[in-house]
Length: 88
Image (tube, rainbow, N blue to C red; front, side, top):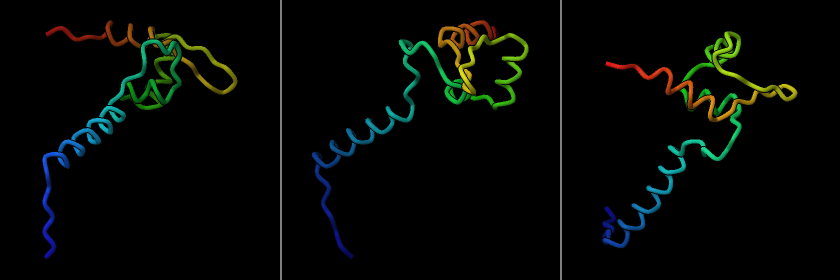
């Protein structure tokens, strides 16, 4: 059985790498990014493609269509979230 010694420096390097990886995974869309694609909205709101379609069809979430791509204003998505905050 091979024994490896782990130093504080090794642990610090691991921490920095782990933090960088986690930051990439949980990074939220940049508020400066004015438009979001459908997959970004679905990921942000944790909804299905069908639910996003219903939000479009009912006029709840405004959108723009360029070719076959639906685009949503980041501020409209944020407003939708804020309007649906449940008060307990």
